[in-house]
Amino acid sequence: MTVDLGRVRLFGAVVRPLTAFLRLEAASGILLLGCAAVAFLWANLDPHSYRSVFDYRLLVGGADAAASFTLRQLINDGLMTVFFFVVGMEIKRELVIGELNTLPKAILPAVAAIGGMVVPAGIYLAFNWTGPGRGGWGIPMATDIAFCVGILTLLKDRVPPALIVFITALAIFDDIGGILVIAFFYGHGLNLLALLGAAGLALILFAMNRAYVVHGFAYAVIGAALWYALHSGGIHATIAGVVLGLMIPVRPPRSSREVLRELAEHVAALDKKPADEDLAGAEILAIEEKLEDLQAPVPRFVHLLHPFVAFFIMPIFALANSGVSLRGAGVSSLVAPIALGTAAGLFVGKQLGIFGLTILAVKLRLAPMPGNASPAKLFGASIVAGVGFTVALFIAGLAFPDAAELLDQAKVGILLGSLAAGLVGLLILRLTRSSRPKKPINPDT
Image (cartoon, rainbow, N blue to C red; front, side, top):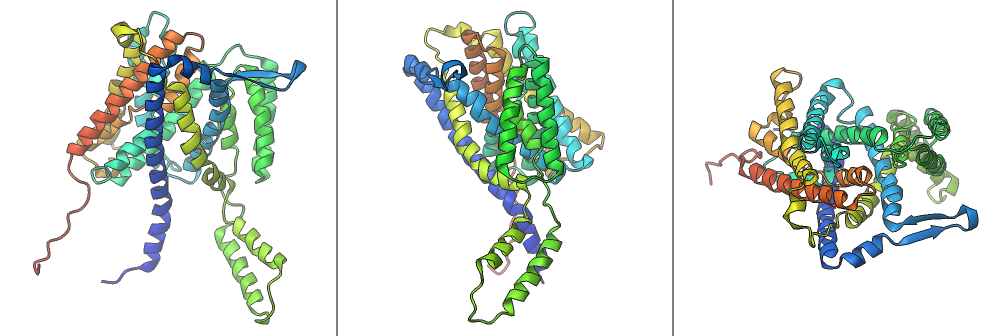
């Protein structure tokens, strides 16, 4: 049997980035879980020190130009903007050149994501249609990609790679839905003048994209101004990160064949020089510049920022927001409508919405089943998608900014619903058959 080495290399080039991404997300999910556990224990063992650390007030500037904010606000409004910037870039990459760049590829995860957002929100509202918790309907809509991919990666012998890609794509659409919910439903009093300024800055970013500006500093300056404009305009400022991410160029400035051809010609010209003559710095720099033309800004920025987001921003966000003290709370807090609605939305709503609409779309032949997975595997993965953590906690903080008791109830629901979804989904997938092909039996052994 002959092996086509070209095809092997091509397959490796396609699979390696995905494998690295999944490995990074799995490790990030484990660290995220550890930080959430530490926050929960800290808030229950010494709630005063937990609150005092993250409510510590910082002061920047002086006189009339001073800005005051807590450490938690710095994390939630500042560092999370970088998180949403990376999310915005990943969304754009998937929509332009990734798994969602055609309608047939995008339709199934999009339909599943709609089910996974609408049904949980409906279940939450069934518990909270009247009462102070009604505004938290967006909390159980979120799927945490780090936790989900981490769990599915642990079961890679039971879960087809195509099903992992499907859940990842679903989480991308889930992020889009969460971003829209944050932008339109969890802002505060709108300032039209500031929003007009934000629109003007967005147009500048669009012009930079069309002009193929690649310098990160230029985007950072306009992005910071956009953050301030949105903050002043009444839309949550972290949306600036998403807008900025969507405006970064995702394709390289020139075709790879053209660049490689010029590089080959340049190297051939250098090779004709005498062997004892060293290459000048300008000649080496010219090679580096040609190589830079092979990589677009989005992959470069994601490569630089993703580890920082995965291993610093998300864990510290979990540490600052997962601490909920159960001291004196009693059973009444655990069965409060907000806690029950959130937990049921994540655990029950996600699996019903995702599994139900996915099966319906497959039956209607809108798209094939991902990886030819069995209904049991799809059901298990749908339950795992109910692990909503980072964005769920973020929306909870926006829904109940001045109601600590209601926020704690939402956090309890997030923790209980996510824990149930993770454990039950893990168990169901563990009980399914292995997805790895059986090795042929060698009669000579």
